[in-house]
Image (tube, rainbow, N blue to C red; front, side, top):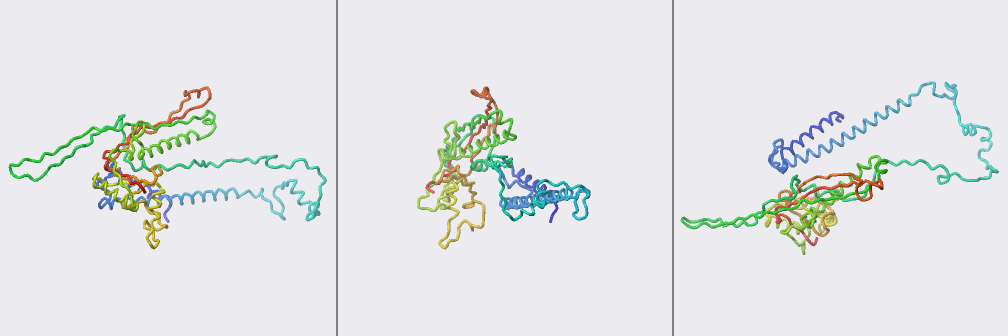
Length: 405
């Protein structure tokens, strides 16, 4: 078994390799540019997965070694504490090195009176006034453990698969090719060429603000260690959670972002009599044939994915893998993201990698003030959080919605 130092060194080395891979791949994750791995893009991606798996195993092994080291140190400390000086120890029958002090209760138990009464019923003629209980006596001290159990909320999952860029503008403007007429053809000598046509239209998406705030008393912020940090973390989550949903279902009416479900040229595929996997594949085909794009992700509600994951053959064999296998969530080779942000009974898919961007004008900003309304005279502070972003879909036909799942 490897030692802690060697495992740590190997983990650091693997981390450097992963960093080099992503640095060479660049923002667009073009694995053809990766030189530190051999093979085509598929082979490089598989190699990266293998390195990630090895890193996970090394981390687990390092944690085990750290736990063992802590336990060993704790054992040595206990041995040291138990190694008391001889003069403080009592040896029955051989005298004592130091006078033994006994409590009144211990003296009574060792007395002849206790020995004579042992095993007999004794009636005490005492007027009992109040029985001491936790409610009418000394309430035991209760100290909370450091764990804070937060309210159950959906994980952030949509943002993680959308390309992100920064901007200094309040509007994202770009040119969209609105006309493409290709009359290229073979031409005979001295014959007229076929005339083609191109036209572009300026298109824009507004940078919108996502915001929230929470009022907190001065006493809470002063008396509860770590409360401010916890509130900041939860407010940041609230903004990201809202953004997670807006990317998919925002209606585009200011101050809402333009979500995929609301883009004008969004393709649609009805499930009809098809199975859900067939309907999803037909939607992918629409993206490939009409949008000339390659789907990079499928967003689907967990309840809808459950129905797909549990599909079986006539003889009861699970089509999407054995129940003992976790397996990656994929369908027709395309990654699946389960999210409650996606409307149930529908699925959204498209080429988000190549034909969408999430522009960040300003990341999450947290501010504290007591100037709102009567907060100053009430000893209350308002902690606010906001961010400014824009969601852009460059090619409408690169996205398709599957209905009726």
